[in-house]
Image 1 (cartoon, rainbow, N blue to C red):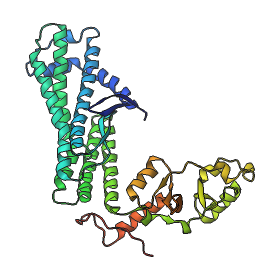
Image 2 (image 1 turned 45 degrees about the vertical axis):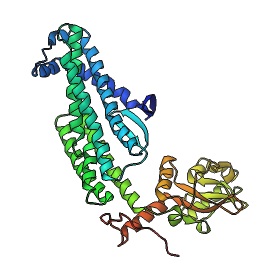
Image 3 (image 1 turned 90 degrees about the vertical axis):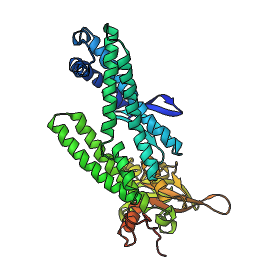
Image 4 (image 1 turned 120 degrees about the vertical axis):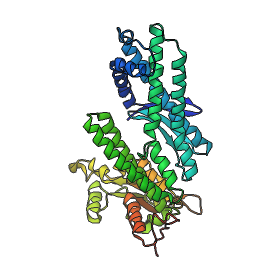
Length: 398
């Protein structure tokens, strides 16, 4: 969903996802409707709160908003804990985003050294415990008389409990939550990183299933949704890690379709002729070449945009894309895959600089090329995620 930047801390942009604007009022409402029950729990540790005063008039909703905002400030501080330790080890942070299920610190690159990951993972919960203790000290320091003092003590007591609970929940082994990353770091002490990720991801998926079942049992849709995203996150990161291991040292040149095996089309060809070529060759995208130079890329979607009765009149040059997304043959495959996913395209033009300094078309890289190469690598008897090398280099035989 769309995100809005609301500021920055230590040079790290802080953003709000649209889902956060939905969940903040919901949290404020939930806290406001449970002021009496929460006060009773805090009174068990000697808070001395007057529930009758706290539930009078609009005060419950004021307390709900204050506590909800304070809770998400704690989430930002939690993510800053991760972020500052990560930057200390040289891992840039793209942003911190508040969304439906809390906060996310977007690392440009994930640490593969288990000590670094361990310290980055525990930094967030440590900060949350620190915030909880600070709120607890504030709770003890504020006198208990009066509406303002009682409301302040309520909010500080609530935040003290919730921040410590947040730290504890995050330390559960639900990879990719903090506890799951701690588990992966500990596993990576004696195992290859990819294998440690696979194990941690499996544990995380089991945790997600149990959390989802519990959420259904107690009719808590928030827990069910969180379980879903933990499961998807564990599966996605495991897949990405295995792919990085498999493609270690593999370049675009190793997996692309070379130019001499790529069919190109002329910009003056008709759209109907293009569709016929696609049908005959079973391909849905072609580079468009003029005078030995690639000038565009045309896909089946481009051709479909032209009505059938006009396909003889329109040419490939009329419908092709001229803003080419290109990679170099010596780029690594994972960066090229990120280009494919980030730009939501199915193929990349591979260009290499020739002797006169101009770009020469040397190949085409498609998602199919990448996935086929991954299947071959993982099917190779030399490949195993449990090997110390974590990967085998893919080199097509000439």
